[in-house]
Image 1 (cartoon, rainbow over the protein chains, first blue to last red):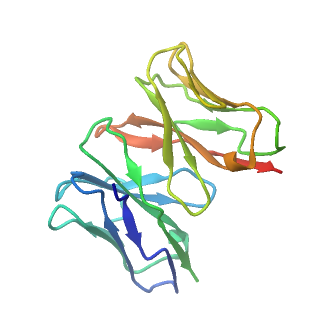
Image 2: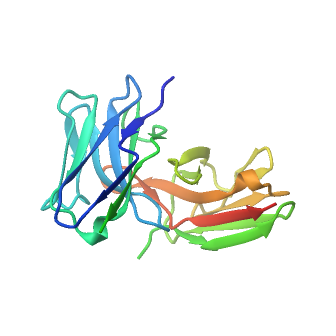
Length: 114
Length: 111
């Protein structure tokens, strides 16, 4: 079974620029998650999708972050404009469904803001 | 205030030593998970503990859930360099039952 695929693996941009990350979940997984992991901390949930609907985006900074999962499969996470404090690893995860289902994580995109 | 506090924050030991890391909270949980995250990779689920006082073993790793289901420990026997990584505890919580991670313990095992 192929795992969760993310791209790019690394991205370096200057503050105030925009950036986008892409995630392809495990086939058949209805639930998709984006996490932000700042260096030395545990991941923090930014947004959760169930198919193409948003379940939880309470910790997403909506003035600069946006995410979509239009066809209920792949997802993109965008930051515009980026701030220095957005430097982090952005992890995508997927699970079969909601609730206490095991989540499978991708290897993340490491974002550095200069 | 963090829901899940892990200790120690960092740990550097020699190969063959034993160690224990802790995950503590003032809240009660129906279950608790442990993950290991190796450098440059995403977290990988190691175990889920459900019952108060439960002990689960995974090769040289022993996981225990506190009797009151507020805390957990992970003990590694005869650590190896391959055990190096960030160890995270996590629980499901909040209005949407999202996965909430602890602060993490970064373990380095020197050969």
